[in-house]
Picture 1: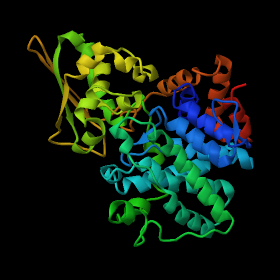
Picture 2: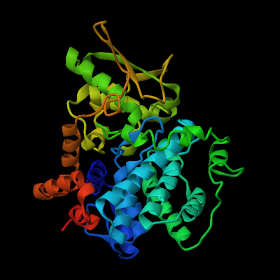
Picture 3: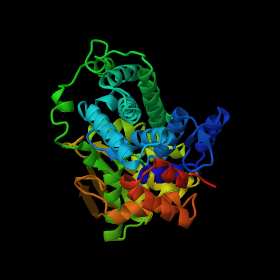
Picture 4: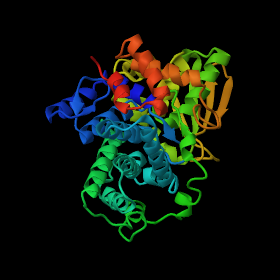
Length: 424
């Protein structure tokens, strides 16, 4: 539900036309491009829908793996299920396999991909999408092994875009899904890939990280414990590292009636691994040059939470990031490395607000809202879907799509659901 809603909402953003124009210009196919009237081939539909689903940074996340599984897994399963004609339960089974693959590959080396500049969603997602596609296409064990071997050579996604707020990270989930479908399709036709792609001398972990984690961290309790259930929903459309700090800021604003003019300084106590992503370089984080850069700015996110009662997609618009009152407050937000941290087991937030009258206000949030330890209510999740889908679709279509996604397991044919995702 959330993935589909975010993808629909993204079609109204400035990054959507280049992606939609590309897929439309390269020919039609049998698959729905969500939130549009475009039909595309399986790989191009996955590329587009995954990019839209990840484009607002509003998609869900697995905290310990530090990856966004739904934006990869769901578009891959939906496109292939639509192409092949699968029912909802079969599609959900493929999704579950993809979730477990992606989260376990990421959490086996939690935080290490980001530390080296790799985007875990992109590189781990390629393997997850391959498993999803393999399940949808009915690959044999040997074919799926070959497909995963192929996927290792297609996995990519670097985080240099965080330096200037450019758009390329938005493609990462779509590209991972696209690559996984291609890998599975090639293996189905006899193409081969190395069986040792994860642990081999030139395999995934050694090439990307320099060492291979203990395999027990990946498959030790596979089938008895489900990491899928620990995927966290996002209440805010920005980097997950910001969320607990935003909750702290919002609580202090409400409880103490804090106004921007009353604030002297704001200090964030940040886990060290988060600093390169949301705190540095400090000058551009305090004054984001693009909307996407604002989504990865802790000073901007905290300033917004200290000012606005509601935070949504428009909070990170071009117009909002030019608000001088907001930017003046962001300029007074600094950070220190937290002396203790549970990262990456949780994305905690600690905030110290010093007021001009001499008062000192503090707040701490050990678990970001939406996580397994601090979950969103069902009504909050549904409301998020309605807001996002309602940017494009009318109320009756939104209601029908909501019901369809909630009852996906009972769907006899996934195509009926996807027909609701398209515009007339």
